[in-house]
Length: 526
Image (cartoon, rainbow, N blue to C red; front, top):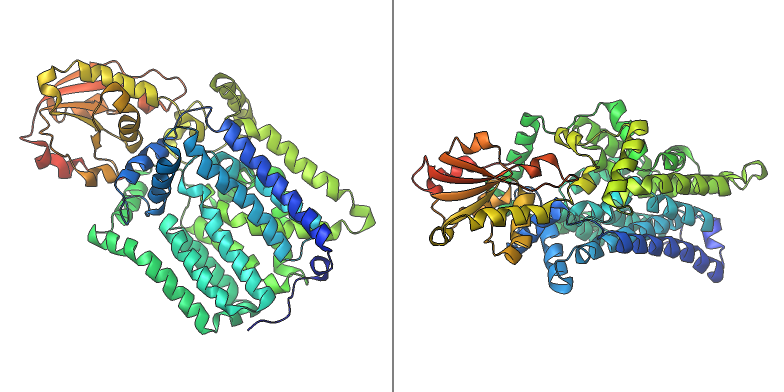
């Protein structure tokens, strides 16, 4: 049932022209982000995850070992609409980055923020280090904030209008968000906690909430069935990751410190007051549930030892709240300087960080700049192996793929023509396999096989295993399976991840009868 809006007087009293000017500020910032990513995003090569997702898009299914199905569907759409070039892969992420900026400004407006608050919130989102770094990568991470904040925006609209039927659309977004990334469940739990411990728990006491929950479940159900059918591979993967010690585990203090850096250190002057404003300000009472929800999400991730960037999608609404708090404070004459100082500081820090977040520099210059910045900030990589990369991982994993395909092609040509039809190219990680499949055809290479993630489920195909080319594989591992192992020259790309520059191994005389027989032992889910 609709009722009178609870949006504060400042937003209600704006004239149509001033309201449009506020939206114009947000839109201008959003378009600037779009232009930045489209102009620079294709400077380097494909990101490793993108290469894998291109292959997932060729095998559309309701699930994959390491993610739900939506990213594969989005890549399939992009491939068919735009092609598979590096630039084509930047378009969807760039649009998502633009939408994150826009929805952050919208949330500020929904909570009663005026033009300054809307603009500052949008600027903080645009200048966020984690959003800038992921805005040129076609992964599920850049789409995740849209599902989370879409639910928040609908909840704010529900609070402002009393339209409980919006639970239907929140359910749809939640279901789709789960099909994008499982961490949507953590955010849904955090929102539920925030609602239950505040007066807005009344929003749950309606049939519409249960209808929305049912819709979310129905949308997510195909992926659940897929996981059941395949014996819950994602849980096996997570167990293996923890057991291997692959990830860097942050202490609670380290996790909080990482939040300060990933969101742009200067924007802490916005989102920290934003969290406090949501928790204690009289004006924020209708939206109080968002404060506990934010803290609950951070707490859940710290307890579960999640990676620092897992919290990134939750920040737009605390940025919006902080922008409103600063707007309110700046109404006092002695603090009017905040209107200039805050956005200037956020933008200044972002400009310093941009060369290590967005590929605006040639790789050689980016390495030098990265070394200088890292010597001052000492940024902690998410995985231990990333310590050895000469560039941040979101840059390093965009180099070396063309060189890898060329090196494999050289090894493939050394195989007598009569043997090539039964010569399998076995890649030891999904990025290398994806590189062979996307870039290899220009060199006459067949598609790769592998034991990593979903490549293991796709199987050994028709290959016997009598002759194999092993990619990104330690030679000691190869000698466990073959009596004859010849190391051939691998790629030499100084900016790539070191393990991608391993020699290419041409292997014969296997210690097994056929590849299908040993395939179960080649599974590598990590």
